[in-house]
Each structure stands twice: as C-alpha cells, then as structure tokens.
Length: 168
Image (tube, rainbow, N blue to C red; front, top):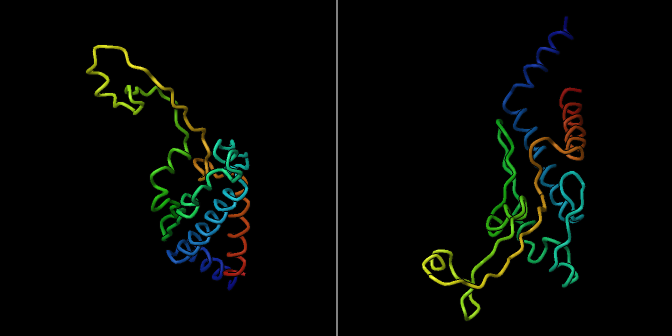
C-alpha cells in the first residue's frame, strides 16, 4: 500500500507548478546551449549546414558572426507554463531575415546612384534604371514546429536525469 501512496505523491508532483518550472528551466538552458552550438558549428537545428555567406568567404570568418550580436542576443525565459526562446538587442533587427531568408527584389536608382523610394518612382513619367538586390538564403538558428532530433535527444536525457534525481 505504501508504494501506491508514493506513486500518487509522485504523480501529483508532476502537475505541481514548481516541477513544471524546473523542467522548463532545464529545457531553456539546453535549447539555448544547442542554439549556441549551432552558431559554432554553422548549422541549423537539424544539423544541416548553413550556406556560407559571401562576406564570410571574402573575410575568412564564420557565417552570421560579423559582430556576434545575433548569437549573443539569444535568450530564454521559463515559468510553470512554458519556455520561450527569443532574441534581444541589436539581434532583433535582422534575426527574422536570417531565420526565414529573404527574396531578392529590383530596386530603382537615381541618376546619382542612390536608391530611390518606390513612392517617388511611381510619380515619374519615365523609365528608371533598376538594380537587382539578391535575397539572403534561410539560415535557421532556432527550432520551429516539431522538435529536431538532436534537441529531442538532449531534452530526453536531461528530463530523465531530473526525474531520476527527484523521484529515484
């Protein structure tokens, strides 16, 4: 009978907000570490390598590491309801462009070589020279949708160790 009481206590502890908070904190720590490892290894959450940037080739450095602001701007926050991974500071400006990529576009230019706004171009009654600006390829650094296999393995190991420590 005592083992049944112990099992009931353990099951009740699983729904305790403190347990959920602990698990979300562990998940946030592990996910942030895996995202950092992705920057170091220059690969997405599934382990597929990023397409190397032209600037990285030209300057002999790593992709997405010009100033390091994007990598340094990765943060996480956890409570009993969820864990949220997000970017902060200067990284917010261009995180989405690297996460999802961007399409190329034709941009009108003035005669002095400066870019012209689309609004001012629409007012003109003559043709305008266009410059094609290529888009950026997708270089995903945060997981989306289904949990990638490397993340799933790491979280399973961490949660297993937590439950073993907490419940024996």
